[in-house]
Amino acid sequence: MLTDSPLMLRRFIVMGLCLTLISGCGSDLQPALDQANDLLFQQNYVEAERLYRKLLKPLENQPLSDSQKEHHLLILGRLGRINSLYLRDYNQAITDYSILVQHYPKTEDAFAARATVADIYHHKLGKHQAALDEFQKLVSQFPNKARSQWAQLQIITIYLQLKNYEQARTEAEALLKLWPASDEARQAQFLIANSYYIQGRHTEAIATYTQLLNQDADPEFKALIHFELANCYQSLGDEKHALDHYYACLAAHPNPLLVQRKIRKTRGRLTSSAKKPRIHRAAPSHRYASRTP
Image (tube, rainbow, N blue to C red; front, side, top):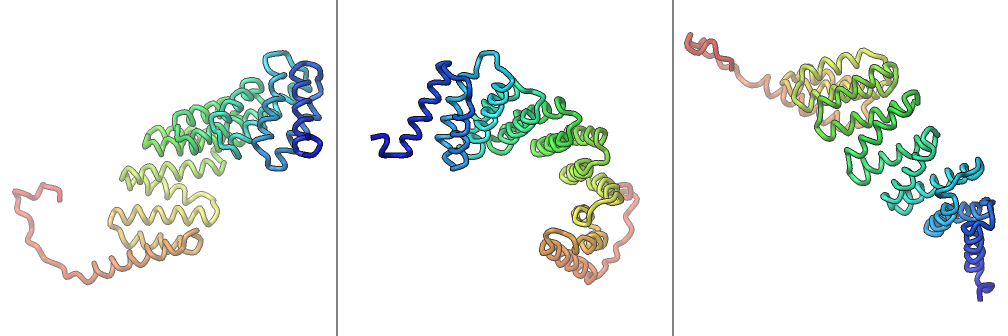
């Protein structure tokens, strides 16, 4: 019966290999690993995960040789990837990646695993504090790695999402101190200015945007700064300066239609305000002269 079905025959052989490995009768994982890799390549993710899981069993809770450690690391990484990307079993992916980090904390795979876990917490499970913890561990354990700049930027972003603006600015200052010449540093400054704007602190936002505008940056990034400066001036009722900055960003902004709509509205407000007749009012009496409008 089994020989009539190539698929069933293949599964029978693989199960036999796994049972041999688990029982300790064999030590070479490569043939079974090749089979699991083949299943993964064929996008048979359920069977691939099942086989990798069986191959993991004989490598747990015992001293491993160098070659076994390589297999152990590879299998944990593949299990995390399958569960996070394809099966969307995020809790299982977190478990597999956490074991990988525990056993191989200083490897490139550990960095990628922790970054993936942080991303799962942040974007898939909505657990912002857990994501923060993972990103902070990433930065502290890999301070000299270029991708740590990205991790620090994610910390700033999460604090902004939590509306903890003061902490977001503190984290941004830390990034600027550690990596002042990086692209992430410019993005951190941009986020600082955004936080001021969100809080209605437009003067501080304008000062931060202007400081950033004076630095070397690509045209598209400068266009984004001009756009936000225009929004700040518009919030302050300074339509003329707002219009100047909208025009300055029009050529390089990634959404020129949005800028054009802003320009039309701003010009309309300028035109309507120019047509309004001036009303001459008597000077305020001494009784009310000290009151601010």
